[in-house]
Length: 473
Image 1 (cartoon, helix red, strand yellow):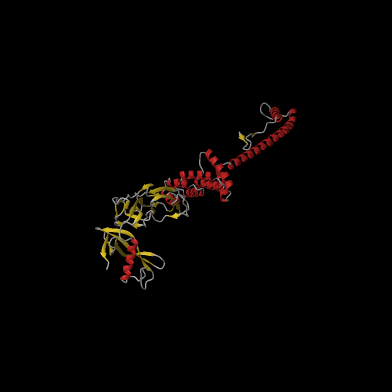
Image 2 (cartoon, one colour):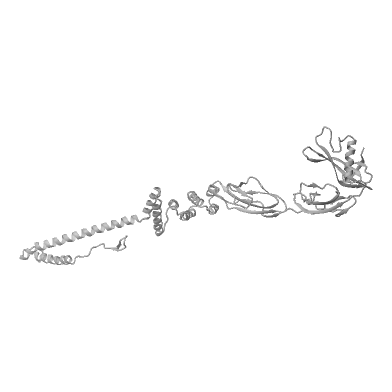
């Protein structure tokens, strides 16, 4: 049986019989036989009889019936041929080859919607026939799907192609470009890393966007260090140090990063030659140097009537230096450095000390308060005036105001300390030069006045920081 490909109804190949014609043909056949029997005798010879006159009428009737039957047969044959032709045409148009040919034509004409339609019909036909379309046609289908906005379907088709033909670089190139446009860099990494073909891997290795390697693990350290970043792929490393996401406008990694004291967050990415950015890696480093200990200080804080030297004892090997102040401010690394014993200042003063490690880490501030009140026959002011007068007398000064011939500026003398040697107590008078701008600078000269005898001495400083005294001439 044949069926209409449009509606599905059965096609009638033979028309219905005409009952009258059929019966007429049967009757006529009997009459002809009877007439022929009358024309022949028992020996088979023709004989003449009055009934033979009916033969022409019967012959004419038979002729009409035969013509009608011939015409009907011709019509049936024509209908049959037309139906067969239609069926063949429809079969050809529904064939896998036809769909592929039309799909290729549409693809070459950049009619991607039509190409997809024909290729999908071809896929259905190929499935029914338990076959498959060629790899190149599958790639053309994927490209057509991509061009009409069906990127996910295109990716699915191309992934199938890479499985069927792992060496097809055209499929890999189209697939990678689609994934790149979609920003699906991780899928590209998996695709390239998972290929089994060395040629494919080497050709598309540049598309890999792997994050950089950090050569030092995150955590807390007690020493500064240089952090090395690297990548085994052809890519540049960009980084930030504030926790923000890096991009091509961030710092370009050129050399190891110095990680110093405190907390540092290093965030880095790799950007390959195709401007594809890798996942970021962010690691926090904390550098906490060992805090240096406190120095031991003597004497004990308090009030004194006899001069004392303040000395420090340092036992912590992590202490590089001790800085101090005498004005009550907290010491910094720029403050006076303790080298040897410190003469106690006259009056009430607050001393502050602070240790510093080799890395510049500061310890706690240690405070001491001392009061020194020396009793003598002269005061610190008297001692200072006596020094100035003695220098004028020797010609070292022009007057007691510290002026010197030919020199702009003048000298000043200040008594802020006292020292003791043996049984004698001395006021220490230090010399300063004040320039016209008012800047005061200490000189190397120092003098001493005996608090009882008021005799003048020159002062020197011994290696241990103590003062030495010689008479002034």
